[in-house]
Length: 232
Length: 52
Image (cartoon, rainbow over all chains, first blue to last red; front, top):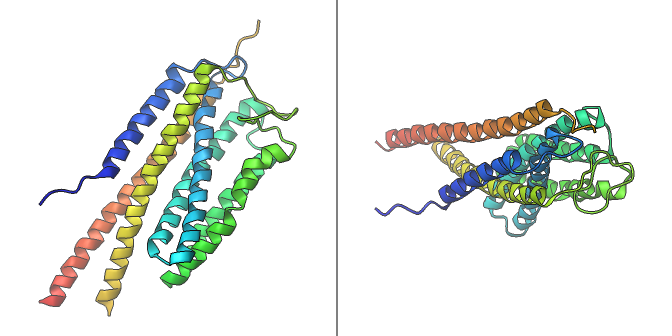
């Protein structure tokens, strides 16, 4: 029997190569920032993780809308996978941000608008995972997940625009910084290239991990169905 | 002239978190796949016993 070509394996390899290239650029190509020193190198992956986290929550919202329209269980699996993977990336973004803040802001944490909205967003989607577990009936669970992901998505633009709407000390990557922003820096061409490659590498990694999580979800659903059949 | 701040230890901590969390998540995906394979095998056995 001819074996089916595994596109996911190709994506895994591309994601792996992308991560190696991005890591190489961060440590051996991007110059050291003149004031902050080496901790500025955390910026490349910190922002990439935050970007991918928001992308994942956006995908969860889109999956929710599609599920409510066509009621196909696969979109519930896609939504769940996106939230789970998004939470991992967003957690990394929060923790690395805190580590960067210690030498730059002289504190591990402050209730700045960006940090606060990011934490709220992470908690909103953590609740998505917890509350889903409390619903036994698959169709009700999927409907709840879809509606929750759509409503929970409101926290994404709030987080994204928080540094542009409110007074903040968090630096802005694209656009003008607030007067009180601490830790902002001018990106050189080498830094810009490293940043762009990091964004692309993490986006590919996100696609690969989400695809794996969707596969896992489909298999788990099939096992669940088989268990029900055997129990009858 | 003052040079850049000595913040290497924070950079190492940051990248340890990034790769550590990613490693843990990938491991959790792999463990769940393995557990599912075991469940599938058990269910296949049960189904075979049911039919015979």
